[in-house]
Amino acid sequence: MVFSMTYKRAASFSIHVPTCIEFGWGASERIDELLLDAGRHCLLVTQANLLSLPAIDGIRKAVEAAGKTVHLHIVAEEEPDSASVDRAGRELRGQPIDLVLAIGGGSVIDFAKAVSIVLTHEGPIWDYVGYTGKPARQFENQLPTIVAVPTTSGTGSEVTPYAVLINNKLGRKAAISSPLIAPKVAIVDPELTVTMPVEVTAYTGADALAHAIESFLNAPMRTPFSAMVALEAIRTGAKALPDVLKDGTDRQARSAMAWTSLMGGLAISMAGTGVGHAMAEVLGGLTHVAHGKTVAVFLPAVLRLLEDYYKLPLPMLRAALGDGSRPASEQVWLLWQEVGLPLTLPELGVGQGELSQIRQDTLDYMGWAMSASPVALQSDDVDRILSYVWPE
Image (cartoon, rainbow, N blue to C red; front, side, top):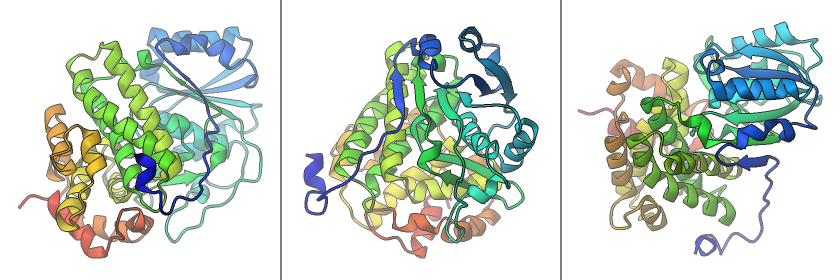
């Protein structure tokens, strides 16, 4: 069924998954054997609040017991910025680091990917970020082995070739994109996500679902394989997100959301995202609002544009969300209401005066996203999306 969707033009495509994925409840307990050949000098990148958790402390001790030297770097920021990456590079350069182990949410994993670059390359990290109108500097040297252990179910960064950073001087948020920064090993242990607060569970879950939905809608890059992966994530996440918020200790629901996040990460690795993520990153660069919250606001609006303005039926997406008779935009809106996610820009503290800057930046440095859609979008469409998320 998925293949028939693109049969007429999908004569051939490539599938490349460079990451060895270990998935399952308690998978992190095998980290010593999984890292056996991954390097001897380890840079452990994490956050201070995670180190106090017994499971994370156990991982650190297991790595040390495996005979590896561990250098610890604590990420202080909620979302990584380029200046902190450069600062870490200056502090750590010269250390014989051949393994970078990231334990945390997507921001920690993205930070670790970026640090692996500045450890082995000259120049500021922003040189390696690319976006519309700015080519990215290419890597010249071999990077340390990157291993990711996610503690949230959202970004799927443990399997993506992306590292998203904020440049506070420019007020921009954009990504490094290279298969060289895709982790060599991803240890996806749903047990590590049980301590996530309710709010974080909700907005990281929204990010995972948005990845799957936007990659599915990215017609120019979508393949039958990426669509299959995306639809699996949508079906699983739409059902599991309300369940996990009702009971955060529900092993089945936590595992389902970890699976959703993983599948969403694989989907965007192959098919990218779209204008919803582009606008969310623009807003994040301007305001530092958590990425999952900005994504949550823009996703139903983009779906409304496609369904109401462009009259696209999106039957497979509707069915994957759970109700083939209801518009996808309505289903996502109702899901967000159920789990307590923001639906408008004022709920994020955004003022009306910021709308013009969001519009300008979306069309400027995030202009790549205008074609990442079932239809090529125009500048007026950005205005329509903003009108949907700014109630009269």
